Amino acid sequence: MANQNPEQIARDEIDKQLIDCGWVIQHKSKISLSANLGVAVREYSTEVGPADYVLFVDGKPVGIIEAKRVE
Image (cartoon, rainbow, N blue to C red; front, side, top):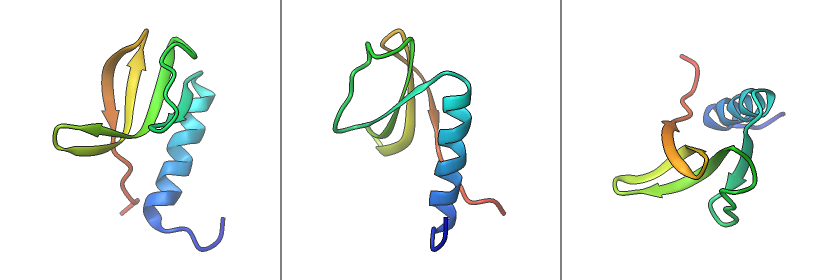
């Protein structure tokens, strides 16, 4: 993917890895936590600002992933 910034490249890799592990990825504007046992929501709002991904298992938040460029 040409012309992508480092953070977008990292997000693309995270998406691939999550999908390969069976997660369903959704954007914050269209959340359906019942879509799968594991749902990763992009740009989910938290008390300290948006997280790149919030991971939900069985509808409960269990983790956060922040995309960072490879140094």
